[in-house]
Image (tube, rainbow, N blue to C red; front, top):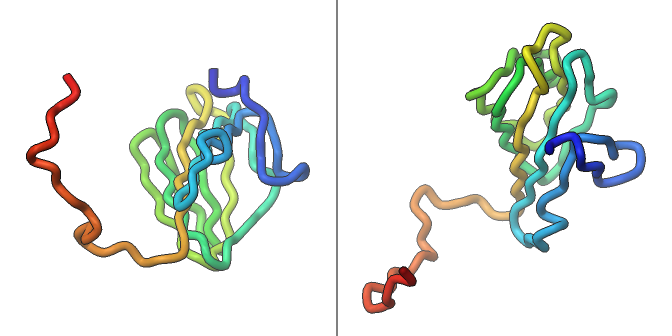
Length: 129
């Protein structure tokens, strides 16, 4: 149940419907939160990052994101990239057919290559099934 979780990065941004997955899984280079807002509910604050890039993947409901001075309509299937320094906030529309649910994936530090150049194939390694 999405709303059963209570989490955040500091007391003033913690709320029901936020699960900080990277803390649970001790992830080192990427982060992820699973989020849900009831129809008519909003974040209640703006935030931005100096070094972190975020990818918002919307899974259900209808809402809006504030990005600096722009408002972006979001719904299931919408994907929004938010770069460093951009102010952001979000809300579920009052007439959303249900909770606005999304994943926020965070990364920072190194620019990713177009093709992962650190991968290695193991053709001799047997499949586990």
